[in-house]
Length: 494
Image (cartoon, rainbow, N blue to C red):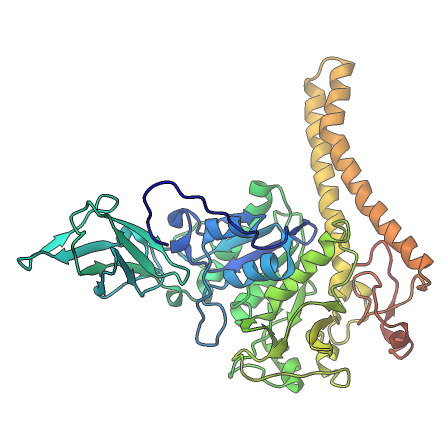
């Protein structure tokens, strides 16, 4: 964007529809962000960053559509950012960036760039503005270093390239070319240990930061995911472990991608071996395969499934009782991680579902339909169906909030000296949490009654189509399913 003198009026068009708000399926996403484009690059590492809007996420973390060698987002948090705010439209989302600009960086070779109409563009991405030094050669061939804001102004263009605008009254106004020294962030300098949070220096890093979400934001994590990283077994196993006993109280679900790179699982018949190798045995974990394509963009499946699951919960009065199964998720294809090899699965290829993985079927005229199967092999307990757990976890979290409120009320009660103070304290501290907890069960009861009135036999539902609360598209499907997968559903069914 060129620097202009005087006063200008710029109308900013609405970039997207306002997202649906909900916290029952609150996504906590671990990964990397192009923090050099953020408002405060050195203050967004290894801490929970919450965003309610696309613009808010971009300003706090930056956004880049740079691609890695497989054609996926080079900065992995950008995938969830796009999926949640642009593709699906759900908020809020909590991001944990693990890229440290003081550590994960590289020195760039000096760049000589031409000046046209007082502007020059450095075709290098990831540049940290505070590392930029701009010089030019005067008429005697001497290198003269220019001063920022006095002689030039720095911005970024839409591709993340550094743009230098010379001030017409500055020392370099007559320069024909500039020499630019700089340092860029380097996402290739990270490995899975940075995402996991392994550090000899101590302190909470990577996935360890999930502990800070509730104390800092007052929200309990609903979904943990790390697209671009969870397909690495070490990272996936730790993510699964982090879904339990958060802050000593809360449990949640996690989404793990099964590796579909050249060295991973490239055939649906191999998913059982790949899942076992990835350590996907935790009942809180949903394994996902293969990858998703939306137009020209390629996503690890967890980025899409996290956004869709959060959206389904948010549109269901923030009660996690419905399944994202059989939902149109707006994808245009399913591919392996290379983004080139198309994967086409249908109902006859049930091996994937039998191994407790989720696959994406394209059975609606090219629109993605997520068909969900949560149970692992040999698991006949309905609680083993991943989506059944979430309403338990959500209600359990609300109950713990209520318990804390009771304890707070007890402490306040000891300090009050009259009846009116007791009543005021009860109304302020305890009542809101009690009403929230009652509301969760009330909403689930309403959905149960709605199912009854709609003619769905309460207490009977096929696991692979009714994981989260009994929603289906074709009743005839259920008559053809194995009766061994029938389980009770209702107010305790995710």
